[in-house]
Length: 420
Image 1 (cartoon, rainbow, N blue to C red):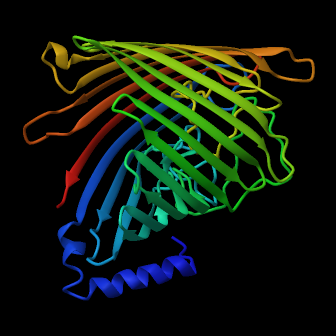
Image 2 (cartoon, helix red, strand yellow):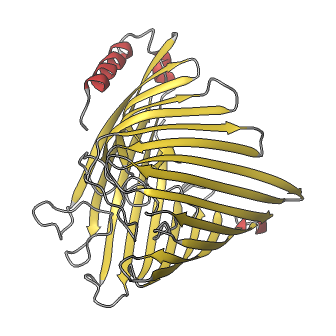
């Protein structure tokens, strides 16, 4: 982890307060620590003709140690968080590398390293109901969703302010400088996603500044609305609106609406120009949930988001984001919770997403794609292995005129041990 002067100053201040016994009582008493173990098997078969690689297949073990302190007493409370993560190779080979689970060897890019990891420190200050964090961050906001879909999470370096001063209103704002990707141990400048047919062009390939602000207001227990702004220097500016509404229908039934709109425009000489709309309505009846969704891209480019992060799109699924230039996509999803028949902890999900109208350019016509996903998960509810989780994720992706044809399986075994 690389520390800025501001971060270093806050960390020194946190340490000074920590060693002042009377002031550090709450700092220690309210602290908590956990160790998450994640065993991850990943298999992706490339089914298209002339694929550069027949399959990507690796198996790895991850360790994530997290510590969160309390805050010292006083008008301005001081605290310190820390995270240490380690990935260990269990199985890989040069012809099967590239799953995103493991770091590539610098001297032999086709080979995965035996292990990799990082540590991060985050200084924090709290006044009233507002908290400022500076250091290692894992943002989970509509304008920037840190990805945690592989062995280790994607982390960022910067500062973030979270304020809860007004009842029902959550305000976040911040500035990020660098990113450490899921399969890396090095912080680097940020970039923009290039997967699919986005038609995005920019004079620069990297950025060292992502600025963001996000407002979320809870009008009632059933209605929440939000606005977000994100700016990736040299690439784009983005405005987002979202709405979530839950309509109770009585006797274990409800109807949930999830609507999202984003407008992305150019920054720093790029050609980014995109409007995206996605919406889903989900009907729930006891353990059953059936959802129908629609997503539409319009403009000169596809949906823009930071490379390696997750896109805040309803049709961003296991493999594809369905966010290509001029793409229209539909989703049908079914969930079932086996707790209603006496098997708590066991859940099932399946969905089908189909997209068309992808603008390929240069007389190539339009592209189409579809993806089918299935998740089965079980979390042990009691006994010595309580909270041990097992999840199997299966996906099939097929495309016409662009992209890869993929069959994919992921098996994830996870356990979180609360240390104190």
